[in-house]
Image 1 (cartoon, rainbow, N blue to C red):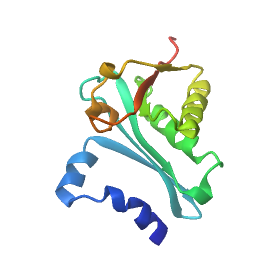
Image 2: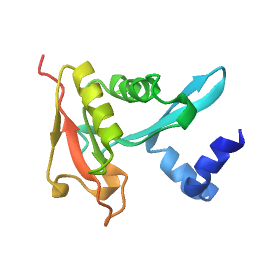
Image 3: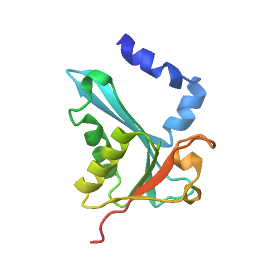
Length: 142
């Protein structure tokens, strides 16, 4: 379990900070043999409530390329069927872009890049000066 702790060290905060965030977020976990191997953190938009924002997807290196990331993102989408999906990805994170495209295809949609000003950094789960580019996946009309 030490590798999970090492990966999490960057995100450790005080209990009160964590509780205030947990109340607003959904956290999905992936497990292999009862060991957590990945997570997806999502939240309904505070300023864009029509969207569920995928704010973080992480899968430990030994468990990658097995479908865990897509399963985590699909669990998020399935938990909020009335919401479109949004997120933000670094321009050079090709693996994340491919994963976003897989999610869109699984929902019979496409990833659409949107202007940075479309969503707040709070909803996207990024810092104000980070280089992440926002995107949306709009669900097909029924």
